[in-house]
Length: 275
Image (cartoon, rainbow, N blue to C red; front, side, top):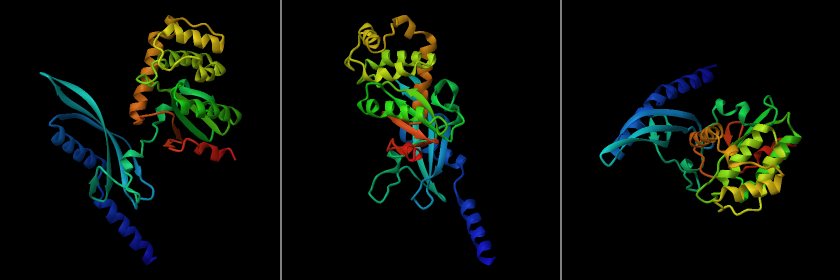
């Protein structure tokens, strides 16, 4: 009993001296303002959790609205920042035993609002495990991984719910613009086979002519789509939502896969639940 009481006292002491979320936000705000010489209009903690294998260090994922001077006027820019705390310590860099910075290998947890009906591609919303994928149809790794992921979820609808987000990498894959718009339309219509077919179009990822891409989609799916069909305000708004979620989750590449809210850098952790 004495040992138990002592442990509770130690835990209470650690919690008493640990930085609060408000303290972390205030410290980060002050740091950014001094470093950039710009005012921070707003700061928000997206998520935080104890980092495994670090003896109690907690990571905070923050987003800041910073007033940046552009010429003779100010523009509000969003800035993502990670901070690590343990007790009263705060740092922006935390490295593992191999000298790899955790700031480069961690991502926020998925917010509940990301798991909505519009993004549920396949599987059961009440399934045991939720998978969220962000993908570009011209990304070679996506072409290899994502169609197989979709098929595996199709076979195990009570085990998985797959939420699909479009992340076209337009700088290197201009053809992804038209293609992801068409895929969004197929997703709305429930035409899963047509969506999957868009991962293997016979067209260059550098193609910028919309009609050439639409012709390639027709060749692959048999579906004729017009430019007007895929450029409606509703589709543009939906893709803007996906882009905002990409920023919210600090995603930088494809395919990015989260399972049960946690980023999976291996992209194959879901297969552990297939056994």
